[in-house]
Length: 295
Image 1 (cartoon, rainbow, N blue to C red):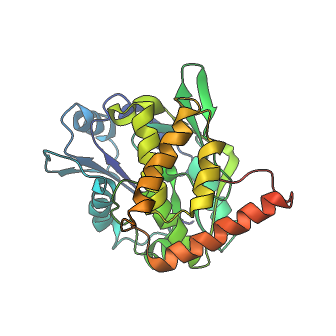
Image 2 (cartoon, rainbow, N blue to C red):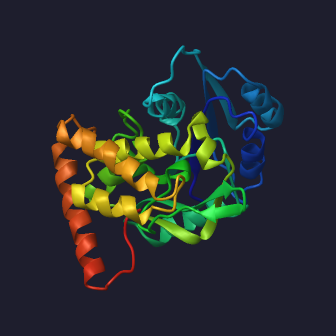
Image 3 (cartoon, helix red, strand yellow):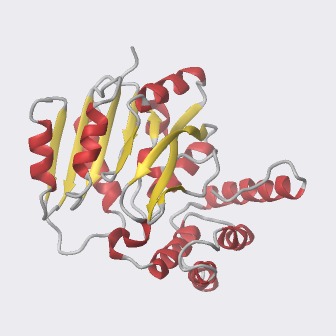
């Protein structure tokens, strides 16, 4: 039987962490180890974790020191703390798991099955449904993109890319996934595996829709997105809050960094690879071979 471990970096997720724990404990195949890393939580997150998992010794809570200010690289650093706990264990797969999601009881069983069917599949996920005022709505993304909140990695692939690396404004999981594809691994999500994201997108991290769009534009620049692709992707997402304006905000944030030639988080090698990949996607759309791009 193939085995897996999970790592969950969290900070002040008292409203959602209980649902996540219940979701994992109901899995048809349980993880060998689950490390929940509290990155300076000041609410009841840690207490909830302890109460809900005290009968499950495979779950371990790791506490990090409280910080006066949290950086965008905090997720990668917190994940690394959890990874230090599991790196000497004998497992086959490793999953990143955010603190505000839930999924079906067969989620990880399916992940293991899909990895077994395709030896080239390096990282996979279900599809994300964001909570809105009108129920859950699927996030706009392509199926060759593994959702960062629930990325499930083949261990050899994760080790080959040296795991998650800290970034300037976000996009930790995107950079890792791109590095995997550049090295010849396949990445994808499965449309029949819903993952419910319970924290409303427009209130995540106390940000307004404008702030989210601005940060998204900055992230696109830092992961190496080609300018033409950035333009098309921004207008593809014009319905995101605030409607229409969000597209221009994304482009302004991207363009500001592009004009000043700000250093990118992506390496020159990765930027070159992504440019070729994105131009190929645009060409396929123009030829009518695929209907949409822009994960």
